Structure formats: structure tokens, C-alpha cells
Image 1 (tube, helix red, strand yellow):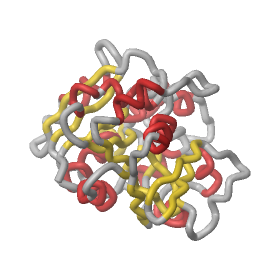
Image 2: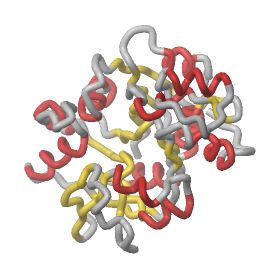
Image 3: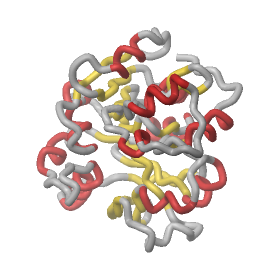
Image 4: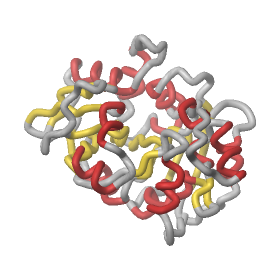
Amino acid sequence: MITRAVVLAAGRGSRLQRDDPSVRLTAAQERAALAGLKALVPIHGRPYLAYALHELAEAGFREVCIVVRPGDDPVARAVSRLRPRRLRLSFAAQPRPLGTAAAVLAAEAFGEDDQFIVINGDNLYPASALAALRELDGPGLIGFVAAALVARSNVPAERLASFGLVRERDGWLQRVVEKPGPGADTSGEAALISMTCWRFDPSIFHVCRQVQPSPRGEVELPDAVALAVEAGAGFRVVPMAEGVLDLSERGDIPALEDLLAGREPAL
């Protein structure tokens, strides 16, 4: 089984930077929020990303490449100080924040000769979901059951439409409708949500280079996958009725403090 994982942690964190007078944060949390550094928001004194790294280690991953901002990146500095025993960490700089496909391309040297998974640095996925990707025999993704996301995490129902809606047939991906909007049907029992929890082989780098910018001016990973599917690649969809913790805005931080109380990351 594969042992490599890529964690996307170079985003600008624009929503996290927005002021919200209704949310009380510690001074350290406020500093991380103002800088848009989701991965470094302290949760019970530990960087949020430490919890994600713990779940990767629990799932059997051993090599992790974290995609960070260029230059003297604070995420790279902070994570290096964690000194994990179960994980070997490396870093790849995304030159400009041009979207998730560009972020994956930044890790090409890490994943060019083997399969690997890709996850977001601002989501906390359960080890069971990450292990399910390890057990696949090829590319695929976790399709999180919408109702379980709402029931078992801090993701409110109205936020589901800001993620990706998975369309599949007989267990194979047809497409991901990225950010489908308020009119999308995410309420049915069969609705599956993409939370950027993928397994790829090195061919993903080729299609990432072919992606055209979205209306937002970014090259998106779901668009790269769509090109791969059109070219005949198959992506297995693994349904998972589990929760995924999400850090998108300041209001998520108190909920994460509650949900992660008593948990100590072991890296």
C-alpha cells in the first residue's frame, strides 16, 4: 500500500481573515487568523495541522509533503519544530496561489514516481477515510455522505454547497460539481460530497498542466480530474459516512476546540 501524502497548506485564508466580532479568540488564534494561516491556528495549544498529521500517521502514511507559500513560510517553520517520529516531512513551495491544481503541481518532485493521496490542510479527516484510500488499487476519492458530514462534524448543511458534489455511476467517478451553489441538492441520502480527499498516480501532473483558469482565475483540481476522466482514466468513489472537521472561518475555531478536547496529536 502507498505511504505518501500531499497536504495543501498554501492558501490565502481570505475568509479566516475577515473580522467576526461575535467570535472570541485567544491572542495566538487571532494572530493566525489575521495572517490567514489556517494550518497554524492553535487548538488546545497545538497547531491545527498537527491533528491532521496525527490522522495520517494513524492511517499508515509515513512520508508527507506539505505545500506551503514561497520564501520563509511560517507553516514550514512551525511544523518543522514538531519533530514527528512517525512521519518524514518535506515541503514544496507553491510560487503563487493560483488554485489547487497548481498546488498539486508544486509537489511533483515528491509524487512523480509513485501513487499518493492529496488532502486539504484546513480539513481534519478521520484515519478511517485516509486508510480507505491507502487500500485502493488505483486512483480514487472519498465521497463523504452529506448527512453524516452535518451530523458528525462542524459542517452546517448550508456549507455543503461550497464544497464539491460527487457524481458517480457504479462506483466510478463521472464528475465533481465544484461549489455547486445554494440550488444544489445536497440533502438526499445518496448525496456525496468531495472534501478534497484524493488518491492519484503521477499522471495527474500532466492534466494539471492542461487545466484552464476558472472564472476566478484559478486552476482547480476537479477540473484536472475532469480532463483525466474525459481521457479515459478511472477514479473509484469510496462512500464514507464519517465527519470531517472544517476550518474555513473564525466561527469554526470554538467548535474545533470543543470537538478536539482531550485529543493529543501523536506524530
